[in-house]
Amino acid sequence: EAYLQPIIKDKTKDIINSIQKSLEFDLIITIGGASVGKYDLVYDAAVQAGVTFSFKEVNMRPGKPFKAGKTGNSLFFSLPGNPVSSLICSQIFIGPVLEKLKGNKYSLKFKDAFLLEDMKKNGKRKHFIRSKFVKKNNVLYVKPFKNQDSSNLPILNKANSLIVRNEHAPAIKKGDKVKILKLEI
Image 1: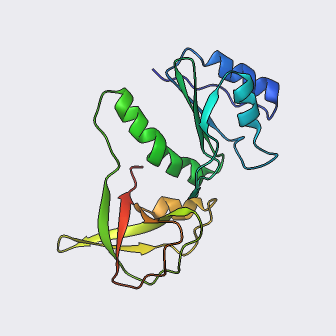
Image 2: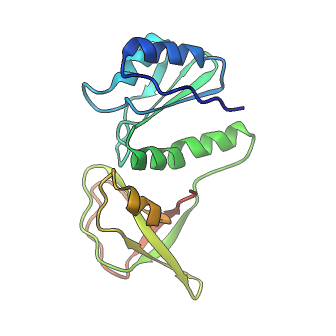
Image 3: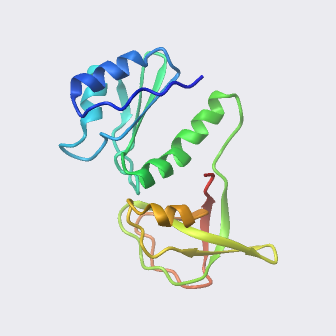
Protein backbone atom coordinates (compact mmCIF):
# COMPACT_ATOMS: atom_id res chain seq x y z
CA GLU A 1 0.00 0.00 0.00
CA ALA A 2 1.40 3.37 -0.99
CA TYR A 3 0.87 6.68 0.73
CA LEU A 4 1.79 10.09 -0.71
CA GLN A 5 2.79 12.74 1.80
CA PRO A 6 1.95 16.34 0.89
CA ILE A 7 4.65 18.62 -0.53
CA ILE A 8 6.87 19.92 2.26
CA LYS A 9 8.54 23.32 2.54
CA ASP A 10 12.33 23.41 2.43
CA LYS A 11 12.61 23.47 6.22
CA THR A 12 14.60 20.85 8.09
CA LYS A 13 12.01 20.51 10.86
CA ASP A 14 9.20 19.84 8.36
CA ILE A 15 11.31 17.24 6.52
CA ILE A 16 12.18 15.47 9.79
CA ASN A 17 8.50 15.35 10.79
CA SER A 18 7.49 13.94 7.40
CA ILE A 19 10.15 11.22 7.55
CA GLN A 20 9.16 10.30 11.10
CA LYS A 21 5.50 10.01 10.03
CA SER A 22 6.60 7.57 7.33
CA LEU A 23 8.55 5.13 9.54
CA GLU A 24 5.70 2.59 9.51
CA PHE A 25 6.29 1.93 5.79
CA ASP A 26 8.73 -0.58 4.29
CA LEU A 27 10.10 1.97 1.87
CA ILE A 28 10.39 5.75 2.17
CA ILE A 29 11.17 7.75 -0.97
CA THR A 30 11.80 11.48 -0.97
CA ILE A 31 11.96 13.55 -4.12
CA GLY A 32 13.79 16.87 -4.14
CA GLY A 33 15.84 18.59 -1.49
CA ALA A 34 18.68 16.22 -2.42
CA SER A 35 21.59 17.99 -3.97
CA VAL A 36 25.32 18.25 -3.68
CA GLY A 37 26.25 21.04 -1.28
CA LYS A 38 24.23 23.55 0.72
CA TYR A 39 20.92 22.69 -0.96
CA ASP A 40 21.02 19.11 0.30
CA LEU A 41 18.28 19.54 2.90
CA VAL A 42 17.02 15.95 3.02
CA TYR A 43 20.31 14.38 4.10
CA ASP A 44 20.66 16.29 7.38
CA ALA A 45 16.95 15.98 8.15
CA ALA A 46 17.01 12.24 7.44
CA VAL A 47 20.03 11.71 9.69
CA GLN A 48 18.24 13.62 12.45
CA ALA A 49 15.18 11.41 11.88
CA GLY A 50 17.32 8.30 12.40
CA VAL A 51 18.33 7.29 8.87
CA THR A 52 21.72 5.62 8.51
CA PHE A 53 22.94 6.12 4.97
CA SER A 54 24.73 3.44 2.98
CA PHE A 55 25.87 6.11 0.50
CA LYS A 56 25.28 9.83 -0.08
CA GLU A 57 25.85 10.08 -3.82
CA VAL A 58 26.46 7.92 -6.84
CA ASN A 59 29.08 8.33 -9.52
CA MET A 60 26.58 8.63 -12.33
CA ARG A 61 25.05 11.20 -14.61
CA PRO A 62 22.28 12.16 -14.27
CA GLY A 63 21.49 11.36 -10.64
CA LYS A 64 24.65 12.08 -8.64
CA PRO A 65 22.74 13.27 -5.50
CA PHE A 66 20.82 9.96 -5.13
CA LYS A 67 21.12 8.58 -1.58
CA ALA A 68 20.07 5.36 0.13
CA GLY A 69 19.92 4.17 3.69
CA LYS A 70 17.81 2.54 6.34
CA THR A 71 16.02 3.41 9.54
CA GLY A 72 14.57 0.61 11.64
CA ASN A 73 12.78 -1.69 9.19
CA SER A 74 12.35 1.02 6.55
CA LEU A 75 14.52 1.41 3.48
CA PHE A 76 15.12 5.07 2.65
CA PHE A 77 15.78 6.50 -0.82
CA SER A 78 16.37 10.17 -1.55
CA LEU A 79 15.82 11.06 -5.20
CA PRO A 80 17.11 14.28 -6.76
CA GLY A 81 14.42 16.85 -7.51
CA ASN A 82 15.36 17.08 -11.14
CA PRO A 83 12.71 15.01 -12.97
CA VAL A 84 15.12 13.34 -15.41
CA SER A 85 17.57 12.40 -12.64
CA SER A 86 14.70 11.20 -10.47
CA LEU A 87 13.23 8.97 -13.18
CA ILE A 88 16.55 7.43 -14.16
CA CYS A 89 17.52 6.75 -10.52
CA SER A 90 14.07 5.23 -9.95
CA GLN A 91 14.55 2.93 -12.91
CA ILE A 92 18.07 1.85 -11.98
CA PHE A 93 17.81 1.63 -8.19
CA ILE A 94 14.24 1.68 -6.91
CA GLY A 95 12.56 -0.52 -9.56
CA PRO A 96 14.75 -3.53 -8.78
CA VAL A 97 14.24 -3.05 -5.02
CA LEU A 98 10.45 -2.92 -5.44
CA GLU A 99 10.51 -6.14 -7.45
CA LYS A 100 12.64 -7.89 -4.82
CA LEU A 101 10.34 -6.66 -2.03
CA LYS A 102 7.45 -8.27 -3.95
CA GLY A 103 9.42 -11.52 -4.01
CA ASN A 104 10.29 -11.39 -7.71
CA LYS A 105 13.68 -12.20 -9.15
CA TYR A 106 14.73 -9.10 -10.98
CA SER A 107 17.79 -7.57 -12.55
CA LEU A 108 18.29 -4.80 -15.04
CA LYS A 109 18.29 -6.16 -18.57
CA PHE A 110 20.97 -4.60 -20.70
CA LYS A 111 20.96 -5.23 -24.44
CA ASP A 112 23.54 -4.74 -27.16
CA ALA A 113 22.81 -2.16 -29.85
CA PHE A 114 24.77 -0.60 -32.70
CA LEU A 115 25.38 3.14 -32.67
CA LEU A 116 23.86 5.25 -35.43
CA GLU A 117 26.36 8.10 -34.86
CA ASP A 118 29.75 8.81 -33.27
CA MET A 119 29.99 9.60 -29.56
CA LYS A 120 32.69 11.58 -27.74
CA LYS A 121 34.70 10.15 -24.86
CA ASN A 122 32.92 10.01 -21.51
CA GLY A 123 33.81 11.91 -18.36
CA LYS A 124 34.49 10.76 -14.82
CA ARG A 125 30.96 9.54 -14.07
CA LYS A 126 28.98 6.64 -15.52
CA HIS A 127 26.57 8.26 -17.97
CA PHE A 128 23.06 7.06 -18.79
CA ILE A 129 22.41 8.78 -22.10
CA ARG A 130 18.85 9.22 -23.25
CA SER A 131 18.47 7.61 -26.62
CA LYS A 132 16.07 6.04 -29.06
CA PHE A 133 16.51 2.51 -30.31
CA VAL A 134 14.91 0.86 -33.30
CA LYS A 135 14.83 -2.80 -34.24
CA LYS A 136 15.55 -3.77 -37.86
CA ASN A 137 15.83 -7.41 -38.93
CA ASN A 138 16.07 -8.46 -35.28
CA VAL A 139 19.05 -6.15 -34.67
CA LEU A 140 18.95 -3.12 -32.33
CA TYR A 141 20.26 0.26 -33.45
CA VAL A 142 20.44 3.26 -31.15
CA LYS A 143 20.86 7.01 -31.53
CA PRO A 144 21.67 9.31 -28.59
CA PHE A 145 19.84 12.59 -28.26
CA LYS A 146 22.05 15.68 -28.52
CA ASN A 147 20.83 17.62 -25.47
CA GLN A 148 21.49 15.52 -22.36
CA ASP A 149 20.72 18.30 -19.88
CA SER A 150 19.11 16.66 -16.85
CA SER A 151 16.23 19.14 -16.89
CA ASN A 152 15.27 18.35 -20.50
CA LEU A 153 11.90 16.61 -20.17
CA PRO A 154 10.97 16.73 -23.88
CA ILE A 155 14.02 14.58 -24.69
CA LEU A 156 13.14 12.15 -21.90
CA ASN A 157 9.64 11.94 -23.35
CA LYS A 158 11.07 10.94 -26.74
CA ALA A 159 13.62 8.47 -25.34
CA ASN A 160 12.93 4.74 -25.12
CA SER A 161 16.37 3.70 -23.89
CA LEU A 162 19.54 4.73 -22.12
CA ILE A 163 22.98 4.17 -23.57
CA VAL A 164 25.27 3.15 -20.73
CA ARG A 165 28.77 4.70 -20.88
CA ASN A 166 31.27 3.75 -18.20
CA GLU A 167 33.54 6.23 -16.51
CA HIS A 168 36.31 7.54 -18.79
CA ALA A 169 35.03 5.45 -21.74
CA PRO A 170 36.85 6.37 -24.96
CA ALA A 171 35.19 7.95 -27.97
CA ILE A 172 33.24 5.47 -30.08
CA LYS A 173 32.22 5.43 -33.73
CA LYS A 174 29.02 4.89 -35.65
CA GLY A 175 28.49 1.13 -35.95
CA ASP A 176 30.20 0.31 -32.66
CA LYS A 177 28.32 -1.86 -30.19
CA VAL A 178 27.03 -0.29 -26.94
CA LYS A 179 24.97 -1.47 -23.99
CA ILE A 180 21.49 -0.01 -23.67
CA LEU A 181 18.80 -0.22 -21.03
CA LYS A 182 15.22 -0.05 -22.22
CA LEU A 183 13.25 2.64 -20.38
CA GLU A 184 10.20 1.29 -18.57
CA ILE A 185 8.08 4.44 -18.44
